[in-house]
Image (cartoon, rainbow, N blue to C red; front, side, top):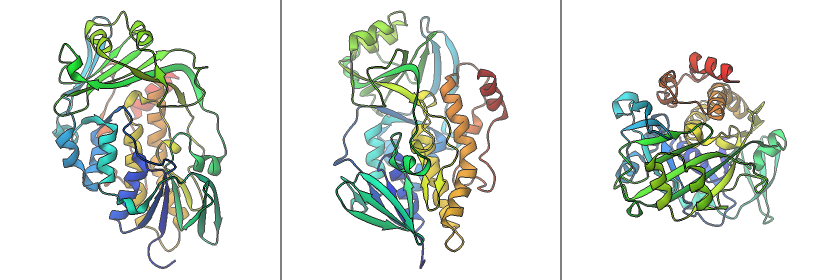
Length: 392
């Protein structure tokens, strides 16, 4: 091929836009295909840890996020009933050379859109097929249109059509847990919820609470509660929850938790479904990124963060392509990333991260996707692996 490969990206979520931004910075021509007809402001918060903020810094949106996001003093873990502190990890910027920010998901999405021109994003494009021939990939869409590229990145989330094409359809795992979530005005509260992002641990459930704006004008919470999910057969962010049921589920928790839930006007709920690590992330010139290849529970706040890491590593691997060896670049990306994301998947599923002082956090938050050695698996904590094996 003449010049750098032309890259098609399926999905315009956090991972898709992040990889579009990193590839454009590296001089690649990209086209992003999104099945939705427009971008909406889904009511949910998101945490960006130092490991993902280092990528966003290079993309050029760190200052924009700092202007609007809440910067927690610490990861604070408390017992759900008494409020006793179980572990607190202060998160000054100097600790891992990048800030820790909490924000509304839409604010992060808008920031990423600010560095990816709309003229390379095509809406209402639901993928129906991929065909690899002669070093090119043809994408087919439900509206009857087609597009061609030298390579395709599947960043189309937990319901990835690209994944189904690459590795075949899979069945998500339901472990009997559901999540409630809501974003609402802090003015509805009768108290300040504090300067930290707080996770309140119960015996069989938890709730994470934090502000999403620098002005502390919005409160967000997300829970994990044991409940059968026959009512919901797949992940959905739009199903409405019953606030009275939610409050009852946390009736025995600390008054600060009950105050947040008491002020909450409405909520959403969804089944927490999981998938085991995939055997492969690529097939020829087609590769997966983010939730499409390593979906994980929200318990470590690393779903979007690891997809953003993926974006930087994938851009680096493609920039190093020798000749037309796109498939080789994709295998190198997978070899470096898969050990790290598999560990995070497992730890997140176990839901023990930061519960006490036993975990080293430097391997997770200190990772730098721009400077990591791509010819070695991403550094992992041997202690974390040991803890995961013990838990399983």
